[in-house]
Amino acid sequence: MGYSQAYFYKKRILTSLLSWALVLCLLGLIFLSSLFLDNYFLPEKKNFFYIPPIRVLEMASGSFRGLCAGLFYIRGILALSEEIGDFNARIDWVQRNFAVAMALDPKLIQGYFFAGVVVGRNQEGIIKGIQFLEKGLNNNPRAWQIPYWIGFNYYQLQNFLKAAEFYEKAAGFYDAPKFLKSIQPIYYYRAGEPELGVMYLEGLLQSVKDPGQLEWINGKLKWLKDIVYLEDKIKQFKVLYGHCPQTLDKLIEIGLLKDIPQDPFGGGYYLDWDSCRIKSKLSQGGDFKTRQHLECK
Image (cartoon, rainbow, N blue to C red; front, side, top):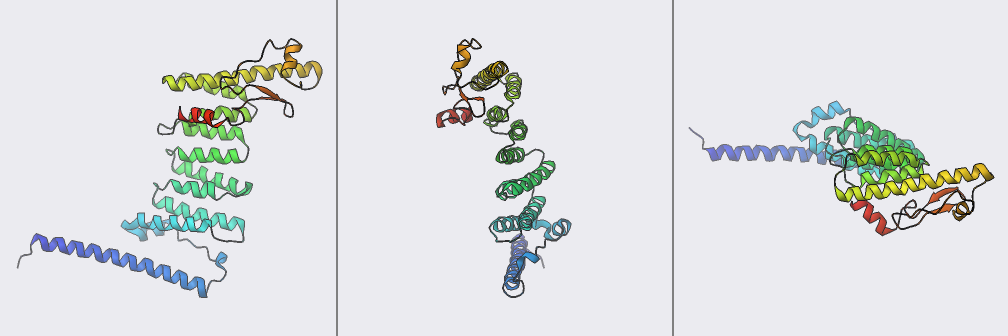
């Protein structure tokens, strides 16, 4: 007796539905078992942080690897808000869940943000986040977001040179947003190395042809060169008099400076006497209009 094509089609649909039903039943059983253990057998959850080896999970999940990755991803997000007494244990538990999720599904790049940035609530946590992200960069060398988040963590640690270094790496990716190319000079300045910012921008000029981008590169280049020039004059004053001048006008009075250069961003240069460094509105982050101009180019 022959079978029609419709019969086989219905049979495949039924088989697929039964497979999904089995998976959902297993997931429900795992959830209920976990709930039961939490309520009756595991009052101290901090002693029960277990995740099967990744190879076991890869074999067990089979064609449902993406679904399994999603479960660990959600588990990692939930772990961020869990109250775990031991600080290191909490971070380790969060990062292990996200590490498994992204090993099963490398496309879950956003997981690096949660496990590498959100998890850090203090200096120690930020350092652990950097370590996690650096491992992620080795596993995902084509994701511009990872070096960008590493740079952000270094910025939180006030390590501006390292922040600039990783922002520069992120900016080198073809699909990275344009604003990444514009922020490194600020961090070179804050690290006390404006000369490095000048070198970076002069190199960038050789690879950019867009008129709009050339405009902001030349603007920032003039800004940094002005700062290098003025701070060099301040160093000369300190050699002569042994202390920092009160204002930039003092440099003009003694003939070290003819006039104060015009700030290309309109904020105006001034001398911060406490640090004996040149500052401007841009060096303090700029007003909203300046930031909008810089990030949209």
